[in-house]
Image (cartoon, rainbow over all chains, first blue to last red; front, top):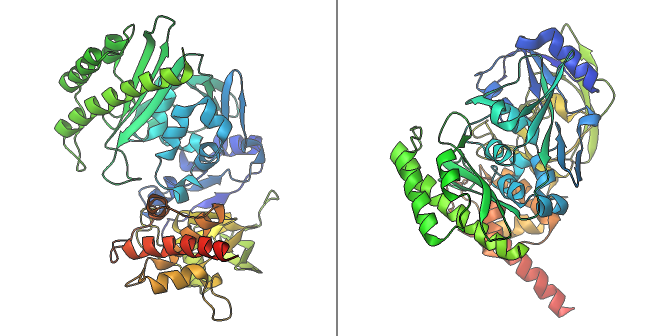
Length: 292
Length: 172
């Protein structure tokens, strides 16, 4: 038997989930897709006394896409969003990010909200949510709040959720006309944890300049990292070759990435500059596609 | 799957009912038992192999409700009401499936430890559509690790399937 002993709860509605969280809080873990939690249980890195399986809560199974944006409830699996043509059309950057998550077998089970609540610093979705200024809708039995993605991720594997709270859904505001975004990452092998990833979003104005640029990296810091200096450097420009060379230089000089067994800080710094430059260059291609 | 589950508080065991390779049965399982260990130890279907037990290697891949999943990353109790397919469900009456035949013909396995997981990943993938290019073949294999073959045989096996299929259509 691999995981330590726990009491398994299989609530069928959200109120029941929140009641269980209120009752067991610190001693409980939520089981959604389980693609990060189950390895931790198998290795006994975690040994919660209570496991609250939300897979039978049918009211958490859907996502909603309309003109205002995308609302993704807690049980929506990566693969479900990845294979939705409507989501790909409305949020190409999200589609790109989802396709980069591990392998299809993992994406068949893993959930979007689960990945966000897990808050792995190398994960794709947290950076994308920060880049798109998404909001996390959090509930406990007695309270309800909405947290901006930028404030939600606190540290590696640590989110703003407290023990009695559930990430019920995430709201991603619609991308305006002219807004484009890409996601790219460097991995040792396909599907591995990213050494670095970058979500790059901006809005082309009618003069052919990119505005409100957001550049968010994963894998370089304990949380998704906004490169505000680089954002300021490129915002308001036409992303000419000169600007791209300049921003790559700026990132390589200013970034102080983490170092681990997978790669050195030096290498991370270098490839971060490269993928940001590449990402920005792709924003130019996307501008041609939308004919701004 | 929406009705409340039946927990025995003393034994910490739960009754589950599920369909495995077409036959439906009930089992009384411990809450913390993984689906992979359940299949191997409680059901006796040892064709599902365990490699890393944390979702990286793909050896334990099975099909649950038409989707390829890691059975080491699920609890048996989560499969209550589900329909599972394992490697034991592929060959019928001693006759291998075309995919298995292609694996044999193209030397797509050596030690065979990873093969059952790979077959199930591919069965799920092939139901979504044919694998026609080497890139598609490699993509479809990317969630499973094989340390013997270098994947070359598997890629040829997969491509031979789509070639023979288009060949058949031409004959017709």
